[in-house]
Length: 355
Image (spheres, rainbow, N blue to C red):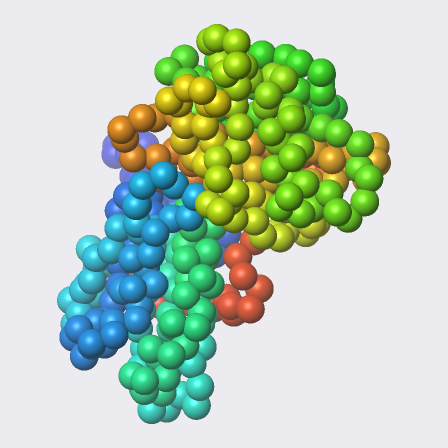
């Protein structure tokens, strides 16, 4: 009898534990399916098979700053009547909702509705034409939304496991912190400069600083000038006359971004080794450390000849967002576009959908 009572108590404890809620979702929420940067679209044939197929063309665009063509996402599609329990576990979902009850197109999103981690974007529109126009006009919003969702997942992984060696070096050299992938095991130190690399040299991280002068610091021309002068001194090639430089500036793209609510300057492009055949893509974040009146540059670059580089450069880019200046706190999440409204998950409805 005692044994029966014991096991009954264990069973009740497990059921009680499983029925708890944590952060708005059950602790037994299924793990999401799908690969990183894979998006599933829920749309009927009329929308998906239309001549312009606006949403497909947005998702099918190339990632900027790569030496070869690589698509932004892997894309799959299901009809609304096939959006069942197993399909709902997908990590990135776009639901197309075209009904005449709506007066204008709109984006909204929910987190972890059926699995975790999960992001679901719903695109509402009153008709097919307004849907296509809205998606075409706001294509970059859609791309950035899911790119940031994936980078936030990478940041969470880095928070749990990152290179303590690189964090220690960054702290001693710059009084900063950053979470870089554990693969980066080798490093080289220069004046206000750090280079770290994986043993295969495919993943690389560079950090350097210089005094802040004026707002002209944040221009494409100044960035190239400063980057090339720093790399020439600190990253020479095997023989004299070889050094890293920025490739043709035509392929360099720059834009203003926000990191932890503060201004930052992002640059993407290609690098090569002067008088050598080496080269690849890079992404840089340029930020201002106001406390010390200096500019901090963090950069990830990839050397992976003959192979795809999209996921590697995105992995490094996510890590750049974890840079912690002396006066800052650790990064918790890269915010999504604040023009997209978040719709909180109905707990009871979500639990019923999972069953």
